[in-house]
Length: 158
Image (tube, rainbow, N blue to C red; front, side):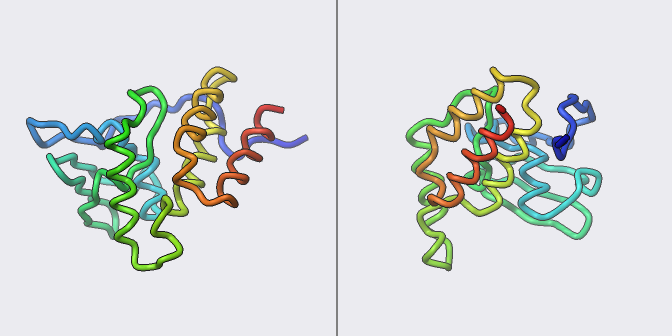
């Protein structure tokens, strides 16, 4: 019998995300501690604070003190879906990559982020929402990553 790598139970803990600006960036709705953990290879306990400023996100964790663009965070379900303007912001951000292979797609850790979110989905309706989100931003992934995500969804749904 196979078991899922993470429990599907909802874990409630105090949020370490703090909004420091009176004007909230529209992309702030996608800032999550899970994304920060994957972005910097951290454990959730090692994050001290994630400050959302008007144009940038400041991440302060054990061994990490960095400013990050809002366009580095992947979309999530449960909030308004990404607009066409926000998709353009992601593409502009990716074009700044030094490696030409990655200039037209999301960072590799996005695939891992979505796979982990699939496993944490509490039921089939939530899993369908994640499936719809990934299909709406499939431009962000290369074919291999997209196939990996689709296989994860099939495995979880079965």
